Length: 422
Image 1: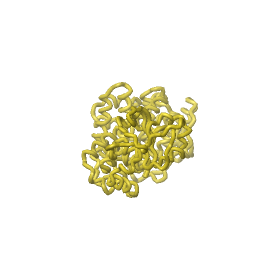
Image 2 (image 1 turned 120 degrees about the vertical axis):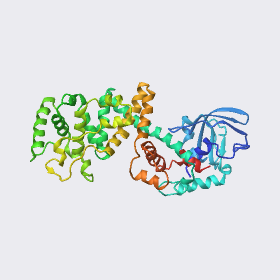
Image 3 (image 1 turned 180 degrees about the horizontal axis):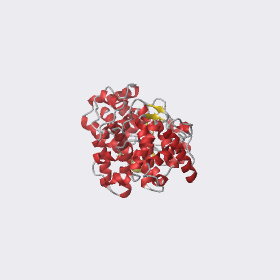
Image 4 (image 1 turned 180 degrees about the vertical axis):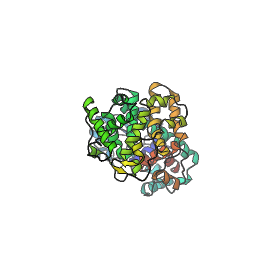
């Protein structure tokens, strides 16, 4: 058993609260349990209690055993001087305050409904794909859907925190921030870091000077990526290298190390060379992509912004100097959807909040609801349990549920877990 079970019991009053008394027999009334503290310090802040006829306002600390108070050295920590009640599973030792007075203690073990404790222990012991795999289907659909709605907002909150940091690093230049975020998304997980690093050393205003010349934009992107340092056989990469050397000298550029880019275990269509060519084509169409997104009103219009085709060389190549029988296709619809999910929607949500435009936050949510659910092992796992994602908004929520609740066994903080523990 973990202490978070006590937090759950206390926070939601899931114990027998009739004729409550402290361990030394004083009547206890819980007027307000306080606010759960997720940082250092006592577990609940600002509780209001009546103990033995005296009204107390202060903090509540919880342990499985009362003696854990001493084991954790709270007796010598000033942060715990205003604890008004010690809630424990068992009081194995009576504790005194620093002034010699008894520290009121509430032992919960005899007050926990047996069925509730059994359900909790089953969740704790379960080692299936998710802890509640055996009980999940019995949770009412309305509970699951309402929880997914809340998790979607939580997912966007987390992503917008990253957007905020990115925009701040660009001195709140929104176009530059969106450019960097798009670059990171073009790299997906495997090459996100190198793509973002490339965007940082190749600012958007510099690229915008050459927007009308796709060849020069490719030279800058491939050159700064460190991919034009070989002795090529094909005319096209040789010409790119020559153009880059001129631009490098002109702008005093320093390229990335080519060893940062990963090709291993990627499908050819996902090679960083291909993604860079597609990124160049996108920026060749417009270097004001964020402004273009803001002008759209429907998700289908936003999709069209990103539907581009790379230059001719990449129709028959996935890497320099290596001809392929497979014809390179335009940016796939699935990849465009990933860009909208991971870049456009979070950026739109944060921009709407920063500018006080609530309609943009609603649009960000609508974008996710307009797109099909993602296809990955996590979404497939939920489908096997009977929870099918109807659109990307739900698949995003399910990803958060699995990785940050189920995998971390935060069942007691989950509305689904709480429903099972009724």
